Each structure stands twice: as structure tokens, then as C-alpha cells.
Length: 246
Image (cartoon, rainbow, N blue to C red):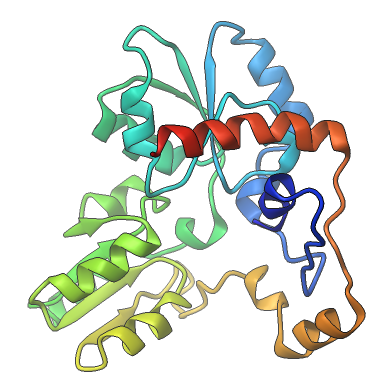
């Protein structure tokens, strides 16, 4: 996301508390390997989820978020062949809800891949009146059990608009803090991972600490630096997303 900010505002300084605070999903789609994938499918239009590297964005025709992915894909011509990258779980969900057949890059997020279906079912048995809410990056066996599937912002909207008092949350557990602030009288249950512990926290997000933020502000580093040619190429699909979202 820091790279996205730099692409959209190349003349501004973009700081990040820890330069290693990347994304497992972005790492799962190396630019050189993705280039070979694209070259093997030269007649395909490339739609990439925003959680990818600047180099992959530069190889894309359109960028999307989990909130607008379905609506953007629906706007593409019916006969257009589409590659969707890098999250295959999100891609399958977009395919189902858009009615478009997509060629999926086989990437995934380590957080959303590790939730335990068995633990989820046990929690549901213990909390029969609760609702299961999930981010579309979760694997398909979990999404079929969900009462609601949506992006982070849509999950936050759902808990406020729904009458249920208890929710089982299938996404990065940091969102539960926001949910509790928004709906302090409702209950939110974190689902354990396949190892049986509540350790679905994103290790990359947790690299950004208060101490590092203070250092970052004081010393104006680390900063995001990108080659101008990458910025120029990556800007086009991002701008297309913004224009199509109006």
C-alpha cells in the first residue's frame, strides 16, 4: 500500500515504519514469474488485486480492491479473457459473483489460508446464534460456511446493520479492535488457525510498532523509492480503477 501511495503521489515522500513490512500475498507473485504467466496468455486482460507489488501493477491492465473487484470485472466486455492475480481465493469469489470466467494466478494470503474449519464449526456449535463473517481472501471451504462475505469496510458496515449480537470473524484479527470500538455492545470471536491457536495475525503488519513510527517521523526514513518507469506503468491501471469506480 505504501508503494501504491508513491505511485499515485510520486513527488511526495512516502514513509514506512519498517521496510520489511511487506505482504505474503505480494510475495506469492514474483514479477518475473508473473511476466512468464502473462506471456503464456497474451490475449488476456490482466486484473490485479491492489495487494501486489509495484512491478506486478506495472504489468497489469486494471487494479482492483476487494470492495470493487466484482463491480469492475462486471464492467469489462463479456468476450474479454481475464487473468486475475495474485489471490486465487478472492479470484474464485469474484468469478462466482461476476459471472466471468477468470484465469487465476495461484497466490494466497498466509493469514486467510490458515483458519481452521474444524475450529470454526466447534465455535458455531457453542454459539449457535452467532453469524460467520469472512473476507473473500479466505479459502472456499470457509466461505461456503459464511453468513456474509465482504471487504474490511463492508464487514464493518455489516456488523452495525445486522441485528445479531455475536460474530465469528474470519479475517486478520486486528479488525476486531475496530469492530469493538464501533459496536461495543456486540461480541466478536476470533477463530483459531489450523495449529489450534489464535495466531492468525499478519506478521508483516505487526512489524510496524509505535517505536518505529516515532523513529520514522523523526528521521524521515525508511522511505519508499521506485523507478520512474515503474511508477509510470503502474499508474495507468490504478488510474483506470479510479476512473471506472466513479
